[in-house]
Figure 1 (cartoon, protein in one colour):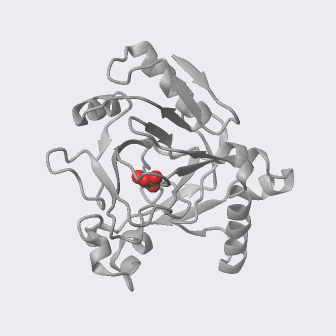
Figure 2 (spheres, protein in one colour; figure 1 turned 60 degrees about the horizontal axis):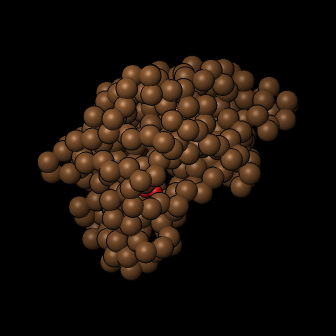
Figure 3 (tube, rainbow, N blue to C red; figure 1 turned 135 degrees about the vertical axis):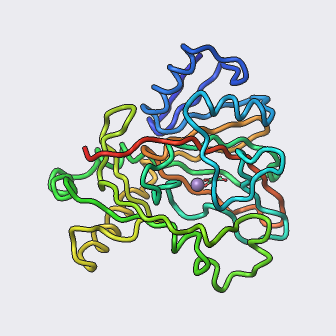
Length: 278
Ligand code: OGA
Ligand code: MN
């Protein structure tokens, strides 16, 4: 196994076949995931069974409540944009499942049907973003907690004004969008022990200890900081590409720049552990 990381945001893992891994390689991958936040693999040849078997090495599989699964494999969620759709899934910066009390460790996304060009995913390192904060901001964040929710993102209100045809077959189960959770604004990463910013524009609603105006301003400033290009890496998918990201160390967003073309990804989400402040 070879690990290459150009800027510390994610790493390419080569000389590896994800369908044939021994326990030592699994342990190495887990450490690398904690270190780099997202692992990229090329030229893999995973069936759905392989995808599930790979995921199970890292924890229990979380069955996503909102994404349409494959009919034969409920563990696998489809992340789909049809040629006639205008919206894509995950277009704003976010980290999956932060609204859960025990948020998912991460997801393993396998490219199944790619547009001819476009459809990259950008990942941002919340380690790098944290490290670059000034000492006074780090001090201000210490001890703060934030509320995260799925209600505004996956509940019925999330789709007001959006054509029903855009949602059909892709996202649903709006009644299940009842999760709220409180997490530290800065967490100690469960694998690496490093400090990471753990708020995100999609799911975080407010900071508990501050009044609304002050909290919102702090969140906006943090988001502007985290969005800087120097903390991010843009991954271009190819047939056979796989990405495994850690939700506790990264944000991600899916670019929507392939109008008129189809894009289908298969996603498996792996359960995580409770999060604690740094
Ligand atoms: C996701 C997601 C990004 C993409 O599956 O959680 O945000 O590029 N996907 O499809
Ligand atoms: Mn996502």
